[in-house]
Length: 540
Image 1 (cartoon, helix red, strand yellow):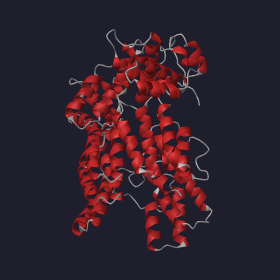
Image 2 (cartoon, helix red, strand yellow; image 1 turned 120 degrees about the vertical axis):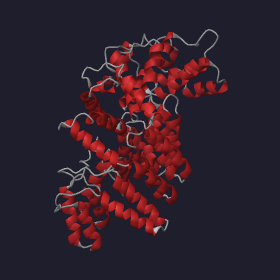
Image 3 (tube, one colour; image 1 turned 135 degrees about the horizontal axis):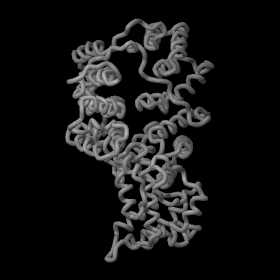
C-alpha cells in the first residue's frame, strides 16, 4: 500500500499547486510531526489500537495512538477522524495532545482543503481556517481561492439573499483583472457585463442573467458581452437561440482515456470505474476504483471491505463516499449507491454544503424506489445548482426508469418551468414518457406540440445527420440503414445516440462492435452525467 507522508506547511506553494507527498518530504518534515509515539515507524497492530478505542471511547491516548498508525500507514481520512474526536473531547486544560499531533491535524486539514477547493467546494475554506487556528501557515492566495469557491457556491443559489452574500464576499477579495467589480452595487454597466460573462462561464446562470440584464439596459454594443447576454436571455425565456451553428450537436468528442486499459475483457467494469473517477477526479484514483468494480462482478463478498479501505485512504472521506456512490450507480447497485451518497451528504464539515452530493443522493434515492425522499433531496440540490432544470431532469429520469411515473412527472413539470432552450427538449421528453405511462393521452399530445416547437431551428438539413439515420433504421432495419448509421457515426465522433443504436443493431460477431465498444466506453468521462451513465450501462 502506498503510504501518505507528512510535509511541512508553508505559504510558498499555492494551494491549487500542491502535489502528491513523497517519502523524502516525510524525512524532512519528521521534526514537525514529532512527538507522536512509535507509530511513525510501525507501532503496534492496528486491530489492538481499534480495540482500545472501542473499550473506552473517551480515552484520548487511544484515539491518538490510532491516529498515528493511520497517518503513517496511508489512511489519512481515518487519522483525521480520530484527531477530530480528540479535539472535540477537549479537557479542563484544553485538548490533550502534543504539538506534533496538532501539526499532524493541521497538515491533514490542508490536504483535505486542497481536494475540496480543487473541485470548487465551499467546505475547503473552513478547513483552511481551522488549520490556521492550529498553527499552520497558509498563503493569502490559498485563502482567496477558497473564498472564491464559497462565493461561487452562493452565486449559483436560487435564493437572492444567498447570491447577495456571494457578491459581497467577492468585493472583499483581490481582483487584479477587475472581473469581479460588477459585484459592487456601484459598478458601471460595463463592469456588470464583464461580471455576467464570468458568472455564465462559472455556471451561475441566474446571477449571470441578472448582471447581463443590468448591462443591457444601458448598452447594446456587439461583442462578447452581447453574445453571452443572448445566450442568457434564451436560457431565461426558454426561447431557442438562433445561431449559424444551431444545426450541429453541442456535445464534443469525449476526452481521451486516462489509461490504456479503457477496454479489456470486461469493458463495462472499466468504464464504470472511469465514470466514477471522472465525476470526482481528486477524490478516488482510477486504479483504486477499478479493483472495487471488478470485485463487484467477481467477488461480491469483499466489495464493502475494499470500499471501506478506499475511504480510509482518502483525506476527504465525503468525496470518497461520493465517488463510490457514482461507481455503484454505474454498476447498477442502488442500495450501495444510496448508502455512500448518504454518507457523503452527512460527512462532517462537508456533506450538505455540496450540491453535487445532494444531487447524487436524490438520484440514488429515486433509483432505490424512494420517490418522496428523492423529491426532497432534489429540491435542496436544485436550489443550489446553477441550472436547476438539470437536477430535475436527472432525478425525474431516474424515477421514470424505476416506474415511478407520478413523481417523474412532478420533476418534469419543474424542469419545464425552469429549463433553457438546451434542456427544454429533454424535459419535455421526460414529461411525454411519464404521461404516456400514466395513460394521459391528451396530455401527451399537448406536450408533443410543445416538443416540436422546442426543437432548435436548422439552417439546412444535414446529409449525415445521426438522428435521421437512427429514424431511418427504425423505419426499415436493413443492412443499408445500418451502414447509414455507421457513416453518420464516423462523421460525428461526439454523438452517443447513434453508437448506442448501432451497438444494439449489429450482430454479436460483427467486427465493428469492438470499435463501438471502445468509443462508447470513452463517453464514461463525458461532462454530461446522463450521457456518461447511459454509455456505461449500454456496454456488455
